[in-house]
Length: 356
Ligand code: ATP
Ligand code: MG
Image 1 (cartoon, rainbow, N blue to C red):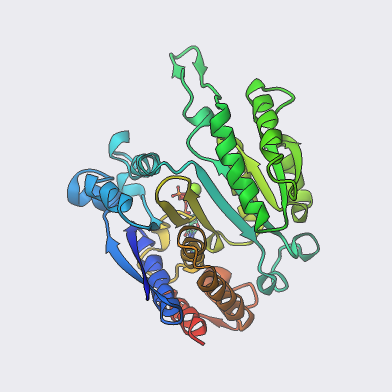
Image 2: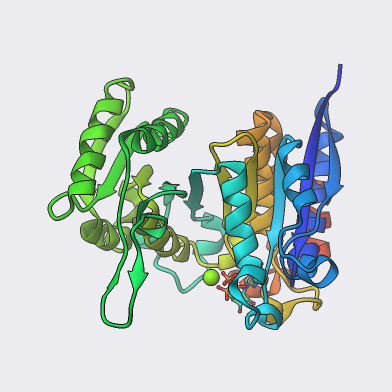
């Protein structure tokens, strides 16, 4: 019997709708090859939801996501809504959605496509073969800790983690490592921060349950340096909210283009899958956005939320072949393009390769 999955689709603002359309095109193409069906339901969120409903995150969007098997997300936000009071801004909606879905783990793979490397100004001798995976804690740490205040003279925030919070994110990292090269590097600042010492002790304890995985620890300042100096040394990087925010952005830049990188937020009942880039209002509506990050996010959805590993592999190898054959969107035109294509052309070519 055919398996059926319900997918909540949030297209959002800017290039969001354009790139999500292409991801769905590719998903439909992979479904035709495999024995499952995806049923999509659209929900409003972000600036577009504010315009139509007066709120960036309508209740029916939260409810719709909660009753689906996964959320496929484009991008939200734009200048038009930047001056609204905080509660009405698109980004506030996204924080609330993550919280409502209980998404405490943010996963960000960074891999370098060799097909792009040779023709680029990036340094092949440093970057060839980079394939790392950042596991960032997303709902705790200094971004959420209390007390917090700014009275005009003193400003402060609190970096706080409890043992159970560290344990559950550590398990995500070790489980991820088991499916990869079986190495975890935990990043903290244990030489200065008490909260980091608890982090380190707890990660050491969890590690005992994964004897096959090699665990190392690194201070965050060193990790930032090592990412630039020798990114190939990393497999899974496990870290807290603020360090992960910074390191995952740093890691993403070594792959060449912001239009290439996917992400997953998991841990709760329903995972959310989105490109790491924003809504790119500067290029919206021009048909030049790179849909690869969103298509790769859709592939992460198949892998991590639905367990359709073969389908995910199929999409990823189609993308590699498409790049090998020289197809590029405009942002990658200088990376060995034989043919520069539009957003929709790129989606169609990948869908076509998937069905071969
Ligand atoms: P946010 O605050 O939502 O993260 P941002 O201001 O950091 O957004 P992005 O929307 O990510 O910015 O865009 C940054 C730059 O990268 C812009 O010039 C944009 O056009 C470009 N860009 C982002 N995504 C893509 C894409 N998929 N394809 C091509 N260019 C992109
Ligand atoms: Mg940004």
